[in-house]
Length: 433
Ligand SMILES: *Cc1c(COP(=O)(O)O)cnc(C)c1O
Image (cartoon, rainbow, N blue to C red):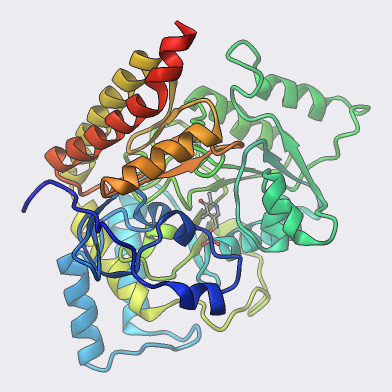
């Protein structure tokens, strides 16, 4: 397979979208093409263009597009008239998914969680998590963090930091306090200690929280990676103050940061974990809220949903778990590729006096402003590389390549990025120097 991306020179007629699709569309604006096929790390448009995908459905395609083994089990399942929709009834596909989760993921890690199938989007898994925390503790307040992103429905949106997203709510977003994430005030301020001080002070004005909701690496909020020490402190603070610790692993999980869960090996166990994005392995809608068994106080149907459990996603998720996570091979591939990515981004950062963010295969480079970042991502797109931005000002160019990408293809995409950064920054850098 050729390594090079080959974008189409001319854009197709996409006027139907202007006429008939809501203005709310977003990614399609910076990629004015019409895609018709995808395999592995490549997206194809109908004009012979081929694009290297460093966005991966915002980390919903960690195993690439249409992975052959996942595709085959789904084709076989549909061909044999397997259940497509069954509300939350018992099905073979669900039993097999729960079995794989237990055998391959939970047991070897010494984790004991029950799986709550929510509506199939990440935001619904977050809604379920915060509802449960409020029900279990009888408290209202959720502590979330600066630059956190947890979804677009009202409860999850209240936990989200971004003002532009919050503005869409149209009503007050309440019962959440946003605390300073690790490093928010710079490397010398221990924000966990500040939080502990406020929670321990009966006159701080901060109510006792039902839960502390955190991403270990902030996907949309700028790829800020919390240190294991800070996360351990947050877990201890939650415990001390009778709050549940919820890790939102929707973007950082499923291998993105190196392990199935982003918090593995850090010395704490969340009470609740939310998963979605790459969980199905194929980009199918599927979300899960994992809860410690003693917290499972739901009444039947108390958090309901017509599409709880997507049987096609059960089938592909089961295959993804068994194929990628049954031994250490995939983990060591991610570690190697993550190190390669880190090295290349560090080199780019050093050349231009910039800084990098992130962990594992979830990394980015802070180019200083959203304007510069958008110049860079547009230049990449013109060379056939799909790459997006993150952060409060969209100032972080983020690399979310499929975890299965060949090292040489990863390098070829990073070459495109390196040139685009040089083209965008070298004149300004020359003036500044
Ligand atoms: C994407 C994301 C969500 C929301 O998931 P949707 O499927 O878009 O509702 C929640 N939390 C995090 C960390 C995410 O990255």
